[in-house]
Image 1 (cartoon, rainbow, N blue to C red):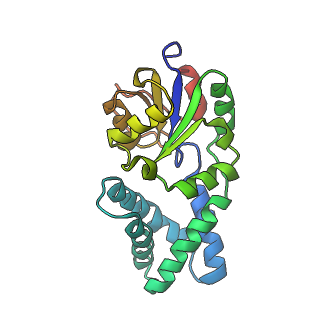
Image 2 (cartoon, one colour):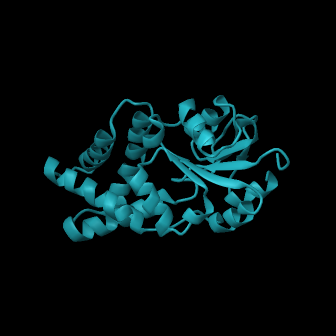
Length: 228
């Protein structure tokens, strides 16, 4: 693979940018300011799987991004039996998006692997996240300078795993699919999506779930050095 790849595409959330850690810190700040009786730990325990389920629906065009932002909060507060008005939920959704990019925790090895790869390949981002928020995250965490192009679902008009977003990203990068590699934490959206679009892919399997042996995978970002 080292001799055939020219362009490396990364997912952002849950792959380079530690969404779960940064998200918990953002909620903790919001609760301390506006809802001091809410336990951040108890909320996060419910929120993480609910948010993942909502993103799955959004990814497959079953809900809008407004519904995503509302539903993940509404369902999480319902799950901990904490009463919130629609007005409060909408305000919190707005505050959360404002606070979230202020935190900049990255997965272990992120800067080291980007430094290593930048001298050998052209690096890019493909994300289903919202453009303004993702740009702020990358700026705050000081990784934006490593990437030549950033493709998001708003620009492409579709979300991963739709092959159109990969086509759009490769075209924007002036690259070729045959020499392009996608790295991400979602087996469906990042890995199978890229493979079905004609690209190479590596699964960032940080949680060490069981996957088909045909899927190239890493458990730590620095393991990319074994492939690239």
